[in-house]
Length: 381
Image (cartoon, rainbow, N blue to C red; front, side, top):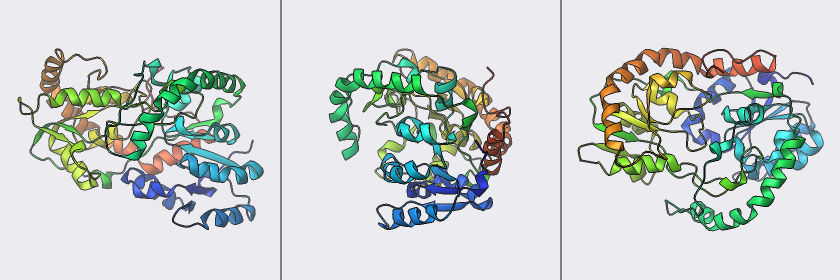
């Protein structure tokens, strides 16, 4: 199989990537590398798909499918089934239709958990015993639909698991085709200012996340269940201590998504911020962002990535900590907060260098060229 040059590929991207500040750094890296970009706007531009088809049949460009939603991938499948010559860059890898990971030349992961599941036998969510039923947290159709479909998912689970076992047994994807491409951050997006603390605890993350599980390396038992259950439980427990004696910022109280400025400002004005990757231990960039903003964290560490995280995060098991033990844990976290904060400040330059978008882009290319992941990104062993 010929090696690809990421800078020479055609990057077919979901328009949702341009709407989220999270993906601004990688967009800048693609532009600086003079990559060819195509936004697949199925709804806003009905001719978008036909334009892409025409473009692909007139060139032999290798295609990178970047952050596409399942319905966007389904629209492309007939074309790619005939043409081939594509790779996928996955954000939430467990929701990608398996045909794409099996037929892609390279499977590129923002989250190392997708590689660990394939090479280390890692179990998605550590075989967490999810609740039988799911409950919507917000008045949005997707959450209500997920809650309603949870019983159907439970009934289908045995059949889906047997099907997934066959898919895993037939998987012959070589490890060298699995590429780690962590979501980068940029210094210009994370301005540090030494602000007076206004809050003791801060939550800027969602506490409800439902998915349809499509990848056979993630168990079907997690269909339509809240994978942010640990984060939700931890913060709901902490809220019981609001004004007794803690001051708390909770982004869930706002109907609209926080602006980037308010997001950064709220974190900087907090002594501690809650951060977990969910029950599925996703290496969300919030861990890096919080540390670069100088605010230490409480929550869950990660099993494979971010070896520096132990210097910035006080561990609390959101799923299992008891209400009786939590005050003692919070007190201990407060006592260690000055040291953790100093660690964050000392690590800022290192993290901005490690996760610089151009460096991360080059690191992915180096893996394609046969080089290992450099030190600093993964835990030893």
